[in-house]
Image (tube, rainbow, N blue to C red; front, side):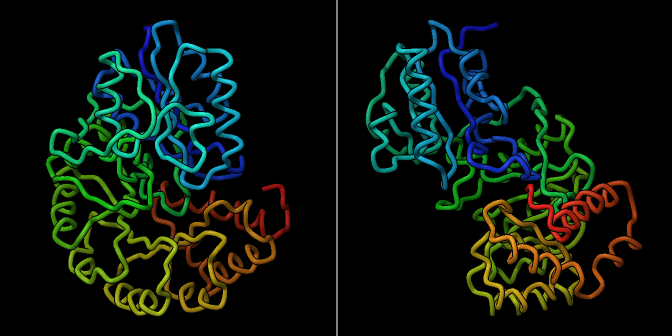
Length: 362
């Protein structure tokens, strides 16, 4: 085993319930590690990430950088760092944000994609405090060349486009890959390299989470996906009317995440339905039930985030309303066209029935 100098640790699943049916690949960390694959390792084992990280640390290791989710338990992160420090007193510990009191358990915080911080560490610098944000052209991360090793990455069954669908946040942002506070979009050449990399890794469907994509960028993305012969889904802003113009194959789905302007989205969904576009809605426990009546009638797919955090009765009502409206359950069942749709339907219906029949062990 190589003696790595930096360990990047994916903690995005630290606070998630074991029932969650998605496990996203930390593509941003892989792009960051591509700066020096022989000197940087990634710990990404969902169930035993601490043990995996510890197994990668040697006397040569200089720093461990944690990629933590936006909504996390500070107690769990602190405990993770404390235990790591007990075993390896020689390492520096960094995190990808700077919450109040982070100095109690971490040595430094990285607020950009991490490229500058990584190079400074590899040169022998010991980082402390908040690292400055680098937004220069030189800060762009490379796309990995080594095929992505699939560690059981999964996607919500409602988002499956074909066998081998992967969820993409903003990997060009490195350590900030899964942030919702920043929305950017890379140049099409960078995106093409990423699609080719993931395609060579065995993926054939690409679900793009919310980013800074606009109408013109969507046109380029559609052309790219056509040339690569892969399916994709996007998540545009509610008011991006140009999305309809390019809503054609291989674009298979358009998703809306945790909408705030319910009235605007309701009208938007009617337009997309008229254009024959399959629409999905991704919601969390803050979803408003009264407003939900306006939405669930016009969507084709529903994904629920962190179901274990929901009030159970509310979760049950939302799911029942969605699946029984317009006879969705039986229309989906008798409208299956291929193996991918069958797999998605089986997984979705199992979860739906599990909740409706009140097996709360989610």
